[in-house]
Amino acid sequence: MYDAIVVGARCAGAPTALLLARAGYRVLLLDKAAYGSDTLSTHLVHQPGVAALARWGLLERVRASGCPPIERAVYEVADIHIEGCARGVEGQRAGFAPRRHVLDALLVDAATSAGAEYRDHCRVTGLLRDDGGRVVGVEGSHGGRAFTERAHLVIGADGMRSTVARLAAAPYTARDPRLTCAYYTYWQDVPADLELYERPGGWVATVPTNDAATLVLAYFPQARFAEVRTDAHRAYMEQIRATAPALHDRLAGAKPTERLHGCGDQENFFRQPTGPGWVLVGDAAHHKDSITARGISDAFQQVEALVEAVTGTLGGDPALLDAALARFAEDARARLVPGYEATLGAARLDPHEQRLSLLRAVQSDPELTAIYLDMVAGIASASALYTPRLLALL
Image 1: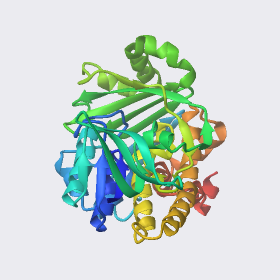
Image 2: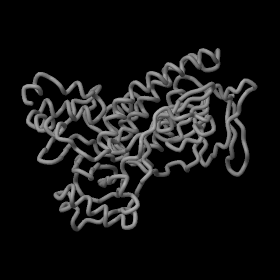
Image 3: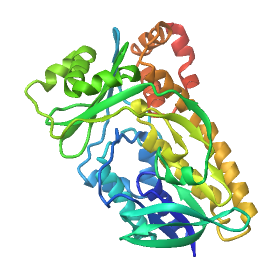
Image 4: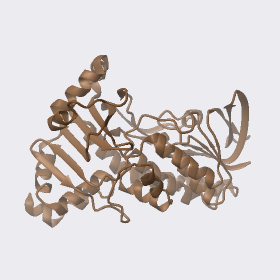
């Protein structure tokens, strides 16, 4: 009998297992993929997520992987050029963008070192329920053999297409249309900061990562997906040329190190995240367009809140656990809604004049620039920008 079974061992599930194991709970961590495998991701960890890695004692391991700190951000749209560094949080002013096969493996290693049991290539096919309908475990297959395992709590951290959410019949509580499709690949020896370029109908970003590589992403309106995918490489390069011409020149003569990756299924939703004996965390509970790259940092913050909420309730009165999960769900929704709305705004790929007027004022002032970059990182809300300093410039 486990205290918790965590389904999904990436950037939501692995830290959940890590923190629960460190709290003294018996944890089983399951994943259908292989240990150390890659996955589609912008893999940018904003400063709130970096602060979490530091609290968990894992930031130095990220540095040791060869992942460079991202200490400067550049944002260009229309006639606006914003450049600087966020004020940061808990002393962390830099972001990091480790490759997912690096980050996810590092998190799993930390979880198993803390005492969690880990099984990869493990597929969950059902939820076990008691006579009252409460979830009390999982069933599935591992190594060609069927298994059942029981736990006080089943945690679905298995992504946007969550099996746990489907098996628990977790309804959507908010769902918005898909807004973008994205293509990306990695370029060797193309120096870059975190760079964001925007125009109507286009968004391009660069993110430095492991092995002296730079991730270059191009976003298109979702309505263009069928067209773009017919010749994705041509559309990708043309979007870079039209949206970020100086970057396009920088890429001249360089070659991608991998094939072009693409995704046209960037859903935007909240699901009901909890029920008797089960809870969803990370992209399983809430997913939004990757254009703001908030997924990993938001998952880390959800994980910490969940573990804090359930500590002291696992193995005790189920009613106390359910009440703790309900409070967690309510608080998580309140924290995530502003970032969700901001992401939908960016993903519409339609910069409006009111926002451009504000950004023209921001670009002229280093302090306002730092506050704005805090907003980009999810540290500050939009209201933080409306200081007397800004109002004097508008």
